[in-house]
Length: 438
Image (cartoon, rainbow, N blue to C red):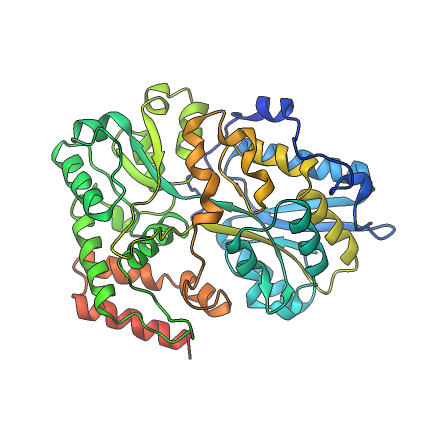
């Protein structure tokens, strides 16, 4: 993501009052309490954690409190280093290669699969957390396990959904909101443009928003980059249909989306230039923070429409946490993750995130944060609804590389903008994918 993204400008205090008043309904004897933890930090342990910079200020505030509480309860200090999301992966890779650096890394998608043998075994912890807290969602298991071994703990997910202005959608003739099918959604986008209240999605190299919507479009139409055996399969009639659909959508977009980064749609939406886009909850949070109530009161969120495949094909960001094998304090690392995922810490933290982060453990589905403001509720099930990096294939290093190289996004952008014709756009994506999936 760019140095100035939608998330970098979010400084909302929304949810802090609720967080302070929150009493977890999941605290019960013997379940992941700080005074009954599986792991105890080694004597004199001090940890360094590398994480992405805050996207919502109240989430960072809640996380800082979580860290401070862990230190107070265990005596183990945790130094948190914040980097832009795009910088976490290269810094983690360097640390893995040289064998020194942060003890813990909190990255995205399938980062731990870039160096699975450099991650400490978290299997016992993962099993205990799942047993105590209603089990892991399916996508978390896929992102967490390499074979039979848990190499990371998928701490949470970031939901990416349709953000829209309610009044504009109604005036476009859709009184029931955003249609639930891709054909109806295209008609909505056409009507919004005709009413001079257009929508738009990023077709530039936007790591979050761009990757989210183009993979939705590809999968919704039955296309996929690789099959179950990691064999490149992007060159298909289904991919061609997806390209045509994206081009039709692009023709309804606000000008300039081919150059958008992850912050562009936020600025346009909050500037009353854009009436529908895809995003996390950060636009809504920013509107509330800045007292832009004309926008906050008039906006809502919707699920991604279902395409011809007949099932949801959403793609949300996973946030896994790993610990390196070179750490001097492996039990301290495990203890921190254990405490972070415990009811007394995890509930207030997610409450502070005001819907920006979604739980990976089922027991937290009933947190008040998901229902005290109905406009957040759609984000509650993001971890359960999402498909994973690689989709039909593995979530490993190759899937991570394909995302980082924007193979799918560039394919759609090349065709939608007329830079390449349909066959050339797909052929280029196929060639790039085969270089990774050898």
